[in-house]
Length: 193
Ligand SMILES: Nc1nc2c(c(=O)[nH]1)N(C=O)[C@@H](CNc1ccc(C(=O)N[C@@H](CCC(=O)O)C(=O)O)cc1)CN2
Ligand SMILES: Nc1ncnc2c1ncn2[C@@H]1O[C@H](COP(=O)(O)OP(=O)(O)OP(=O)(O)O)[C@@H](O)[C@H]1O
Image 1 (cartoon, rainbow, N blue to C red):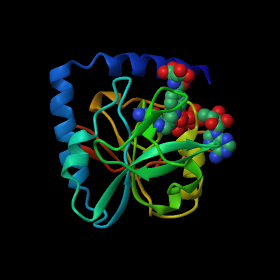
Image 2: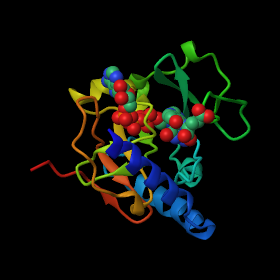
Image 3: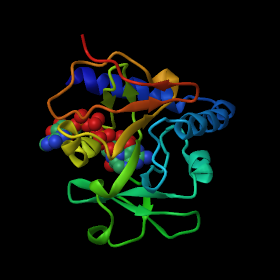
Image 4: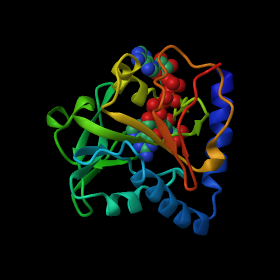
């Protein structure tokens, strides 16, 4: 547990230190990798996130999304995430963590099973598709059903390549990612030995 807390602190500090120029280029590279995913759906809802705390930006991906895909942002609702379509200029409110989310009634928003693709923010990842998040357990609770079922939704982590790390063994609630895209690469997870 303290392993995870320490690791999170170090990886978050490192993520925030990425220089501006590198961030701009990285958002571009990330969009290229995401849009080249062989399993990228052609229609449906895509959950992104509002980047903060040094997270790799999704704005280029959002701008280049093919016509059949509708970009959405997460909304905190009870102890899980709901989702709502969001385009630049649509109204936002700030959630309890200070993260902007679409200003819609959370209970009437889309749910996890409505999503074709979910691009998850993350603090750290490994080659097995394990994800270390902010520690709220939001993605793990929301997509717990993906531990025993196949996509959709396809779960793809987005990160700087420098966020790859060695993670402690997964907890029973950790939901593995189907892929991780960085500014320079797409990691398709390998099975644990
Ligand atoms: N951009 C983005 N949106 C996201 C997530 C994320 O990781 N990144 N989430 C992924 O799950 C969910 C929110 N989860 C979160 C879980 C914990 C903290 C957190 O501990 N934040 C603080 C304290 C903020 C406060 O309470 O004022 C911190 O920065 O230490 C933030 C978000 C949904 N939306
Ligand atoms: N499916 C679940 N059922 C019950 N509790 C869960 C579940 N998933 C996660 N949790 C709880 O959430 C807490 C945080 O989990 P974890 O440290 O894996 O979060 P995280 O993936 O880093 O966070 P986030 O998804 O918000 O970015 C855990 O301590 C656990 O209590």
